Amino acid sequence: MRSLAFLSLAVALLAACETAHPPPGIQRDVVDVWRAGFAGGASARETTEVKVGPVVDVEIDLFAGDVTIEATEDDAEYAELTVTRKAVHGIGRNDEAEASIGQIRQDLSVTQPSAERTLMRITGITGHAEPWYQRVDVDLKVPRLGAVRIKTTRGHVWVYGSRDRIEIDGGGGDVRILTDFPFSADCRVINEDGDIDLRLPERSAGTFDLATVRGTVKTSIAKGEWKDLPGQFSDHDTVVSMLNGGRNRVLLRTVDGNIRISVDDHPYEVGPYIIDP
Image 1 (cartoon, rainbow, N blue to C red):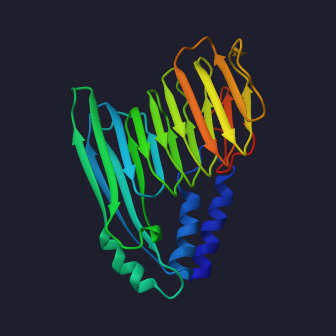
Image 2 (tube, rainbow, N blue to C red):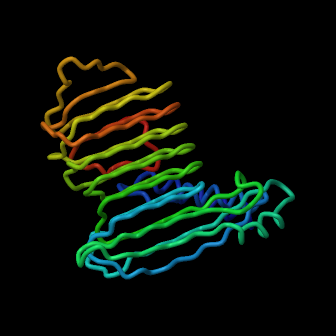
């Protein structure tokens, strides 16, 4: 049964490669089947609906784990939050992993700064003596996405449909930001051991400051005016340029990873894995 489950999820993963907007976290589901069945893993998932205003600002601070935020762009009055606590202690330690799940705590705070905006704060912490075996994954769907601030380690960060400023501090995973709304807000991403992908539509703007250590910066600007700034040096791992005259700062940094920037008509048309912009 375990082999069949793993095979079905692998097939689903391959199918997702052909879609314009792959379901967030499908790769993670494949890995979770392996962890639970063969690597001494355990998990507990909880889904909550939260009443929100039209625009939702999000702050997430996790000790470790994946984060996926997606704007549904509908008139829903509720956000959907799914939190999955996980532990993988290794082969033969399933019971220990199961017992440790209770030591992972996630907290949710919801405030209403104005009639139009809701602020959701989500934290994940652990009291376990071996926290490196644990993580907490967060999947959040909101009607319209406002400002985003995320801090995590040992996890991927995927943000879909952003319109407002973004701040991400990550490590041990890739960061992916895709939006089909013209983006002209500040964006700061500091990452390590992972790629950064930023895919924007035409009429986006900004001053881009891009640098990686032991990686490559690649750009594909099919729509818009992309100019190197006077007096700035650009190379295979460093780029300082301006898109459409924008003054908002887009600062992207990573170590042992690549940075890829794409500006075209179809920012969502990409599979689970991105190789070129």
